[in-house]
Length: 94
Figure 1: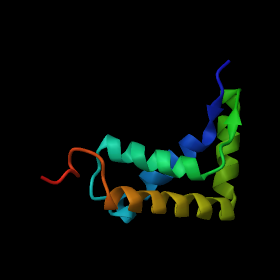
Figure 2: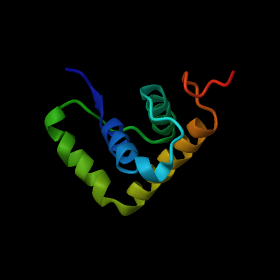
Figure 3: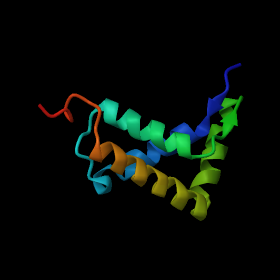
């Protein structure tokens, strides 16, 4: 049975919910993946082995105000890093 990091879904949801407010200079998949990777490396993972528990774990993260603030702050910092130095083709200057 595979293990799954529920925090990936939580960060993904936050990134897409606040995409306009983050004012990303690039909206490509590479930049999104970079933001996700940077944010997830800063946050504590939450692994599960039974995907049926995923909604309950996600709900716990959504209702924890301090946790939500921490996740949002981490995503904002990651987005700023990627926006300042994108590694995609759109961000390469010639």
